[in-house]
Length: 269
Image 1 (cartoon, rainbow, N blue to C red):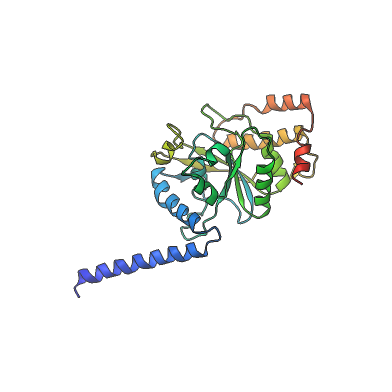
Image 2: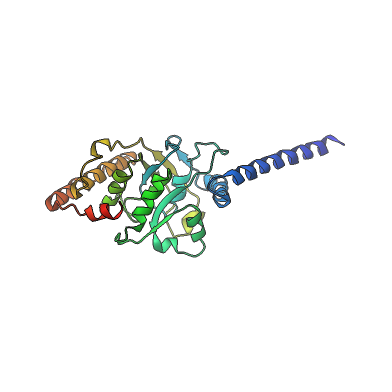
């Protein structure tokens, strides 16, 4: 056997071992084979397509956490999922369950991805408490839940006003809350185009937001607005700008003063 044949056999052996390790870890994955397939696609394809960079490894704990991010691209969930494995390709493939618009969840061809990632479909009017209860249940089970508090794609500068439902969930679940700012994600074209468009994406991970002074307090609308503004301000800081809606929203809420989410609180108890 000549040296060229030995080299070829050695490469085949290494490739076989590598494939075997991937299959072995996929079979042992708590999330299932489909998540591991998506993990491979994300790690090999999207990392190169988006030229992903970040300020550090994702600081999320092994247990539950609520992740807040700005929203400018349909590909933001992919960007948020990158780097979750702390740079270790052999670490466990962990999902982030995103609250997402029901009309996108129902799109043929991507629903299987949403189901594999345990995404939570929600109506835009916010009247259905089912998604909030499901998010709370997943957090109580130790999972990661991702939310875009702006509520829709933001095509303008800065951040849109934050939804106070995010504050309610954070206070009710009593889990760590982390802001994440996404820069450079492709946003042009159809809902599918950003997933195949090259880009230079930078993800900025912030430290945990301390909500301990607010826990245990009555969840009035004024308190929820104050907590929402705090979280949105921390998110805006990561993007290098100010959250412009804080004062006007707090003033409007104080003028109302009604604990509008008390029914929500009872419904999810």
